[in-house]
Image (tube, rainbow, N blue to C red; front, top):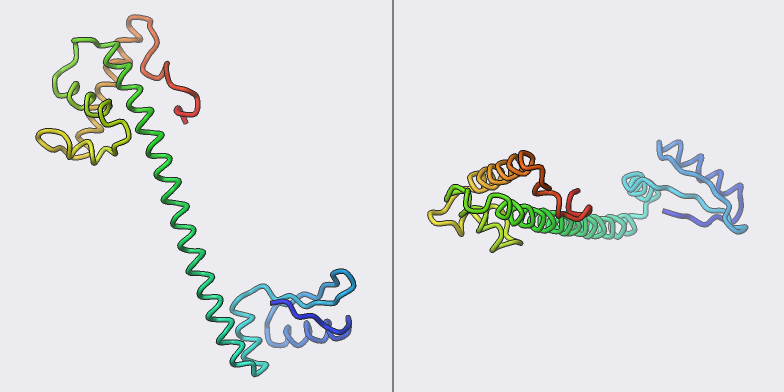
Length: 177
């Protein structure tokens, strides 16, 4: 809340009155205009109530509630968006690593690990849960993740033994993060 005052004395008087009501307020002069600023939303409601501005309190609380709902919705949307981006980047990286693992191991891959790897390559953007439901028979996301992890570990060990680049060698730096 920002209140424009006719002069510095009025601003200081208003700050003092707010302080007596246990409300933190600050007086500022901006471009020759004296203002009193109250930042705390609850304190603004208390001050307006004490001043007898009941309609203003209702308008303030309604506006504040609308702003909080909008901020919460935006925050959730941003989290969801960031999670989707991170998930997609991880899926693309996993798909590239599995592709490299298949090249390293060739025909020496157990069938159950090959199936999990093939699902990852075929459905590069899918989540682990979706991959599990696509497998036949359906598996949990933990089972799919475990099989892909074992496939990658097996390929990395073979690459190390042969002295060739491992499954992370072909990934760009932004996919490694």
